[in-house]
Length: 167
Image 1: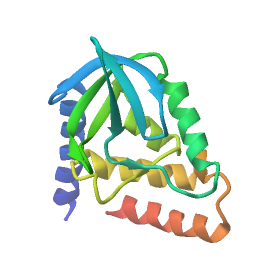
Image 2: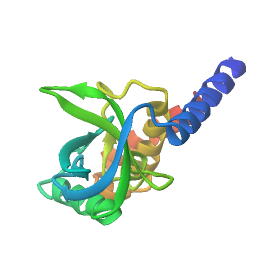
Image 3: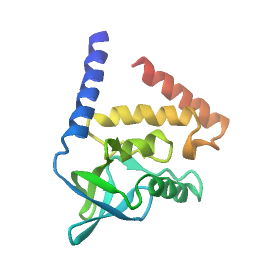
Image 4: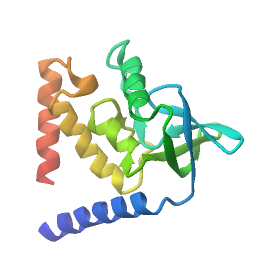
């Protein structure tokens, strides 16, 4: 059983290295507009395209959660040069990307800071397991959108976090 978890952790680390160092297929451009906490416009050459951050969702905790996520994302990348590693498309040709600003994975930063959660239905690559653990840590630490959770929500997240550590 220990070997299984060791191999699983190794796979996550290897996928992180691969996706960080060698984007599968991507574009490099400048973020011209942050539309929401999970969608930005990237301009490259003479084109400008909307791209969606792969594997994340903005939770609807309160009315202001979407605005806070958008502000956090704008703070991270607005006007900066980024590389979009294209993961595919879904729902009416929406381009889904893992976005990097330098060596920083923006998808991961949004989750780690508590301004996004992992979309378990769409996030299917190995790195998603790691992102889910980061999400649980953000919830337990009450970061970002998780600051004003009720005690019951905190207890559920604490147990989810502990359970993820045991596995």
